[in-house]
Length: 265
Image (cartoon, rainbow, N blue to C red):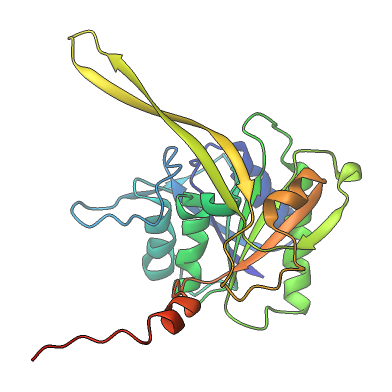
């Protein structure tokens, strides 16, 4: 398959090198376009008020891979690749492998998910891949599953245009309990701004935060309750796959607000 791979951890990240090299060694036609530095938690930002530059990169990847480092956001990278750098559209857009989870409401901030979402917006089925640890450095099990998933999609394509948000627990291949389809959960954080003073006496703030709780999504989303939420299955050493789409319309909200009347006379 022809694959476009991006990320938000940057061109030098071990996760993207492991993913791209694994898929290239398996015989897929791989192109990499990703940020030239870490751009985590940038959401779906696009660069509008300055030029975007992309430089070809050699030696970091498998010799068969064409790679570019871009000074834009993850979404910039995918949009630039699809409209300017690649000679034809890819079969799939992959983003990752991210260093850290993208579970629950984290996907709203995630540059990893946003890069994959940009592919889907442009009409290409997409996959976001995340290793659910900020310290674990063995990306090979996640890359091995990515290869299995890509091979599966080559034979049985996705039935609709969608994004698969895949989270892999930070354990060995033998310890993985299986693969489960999931719903997006809700991950609440204790957001703390650490107040500091720079050498010139100016105050600044550094955003930190820890997970406070993982909870069920609210009712009314028309999601099957028997499907587990993503944050639950990771704790049980399962790989989580959550299908996503970019239309955020709240169907139950449309129903509940249908009685609203506005008098303009």
